[in-house]
Length: 352
Image (cartoon, rainbow, N blue to C red; front, side, top):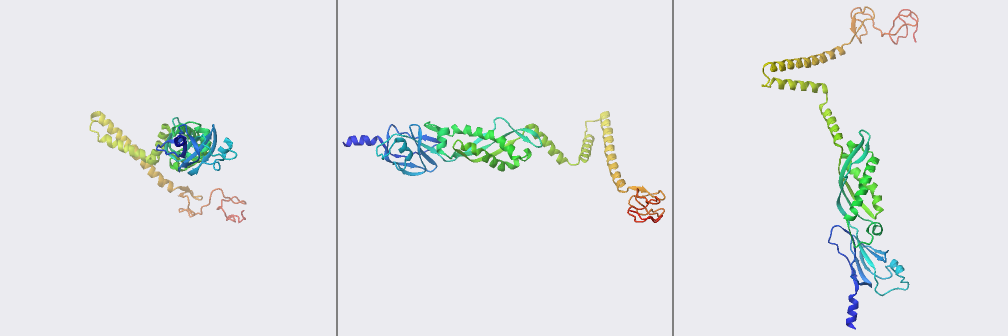
């Protein structure tokens, strides 16, 4: 009898637990080795784990981290599926899956093909981007139904491709909705990453997953756009194009004068060309310098004697006549009077 009892006992499982020494296992089916689970067996679920019983293909009870004694009291779904209406103390068979709920961190993503975006300044642009993300199983039951199924082992590689597809497909929409200009993308990686994470999480939740972190490390613009940006930057550095042209001409003349290989007629031609260029440069400089004082000392003709006087003079320095603004005349006699005069100095008629 003792031998038979030992044989029966060896066919029963009274302690159930799973330790994971890998870094990428998301779900694992517990190996029963043909044994049955003893009613009252001890189930240990570690932190960042969840245990799910499956009875003949149907999801049953889910156990969160902790130590659980398997009885009909804490297995209501299994009790209903097995029709244990009046309690059950005998061993039973069932599939048991452990799901890893820890974070799977620093997973890389990138755009294999350019993503289209609409920019206010540049119009339609093709951009490339790459970065990293972290995720975990947020709903073990949904994950089992939608992704895992009944495989004996499921790793990160099986779901990483799907998450990358979700990221890349939603990236262009997220960038468009954020309305961040292309030139300001690099300064807003953090804000844009948080926005993309918020927009993509509902799609991940449909698979029982959650994006815990999303990072955009780089967004690159097309080469043609980058060249145009470099040209704009160069123009900003140059500043006054007139002064820059003069500086370039002076540098060219200095290099031509210091070139020992340009002898004979060739050197003479260079010298003459340099002299002509220098004359043009100095001529332009002199004309610009003379134009400024002339503009500052604008003149006009005296309204009485016609002599040239300063434009803002109130009296003529030649004849002493008071100056009046053109276009103001007496409404009675037609004599030219100062703008704003209340009475005409000629006929005395009130104006206005």
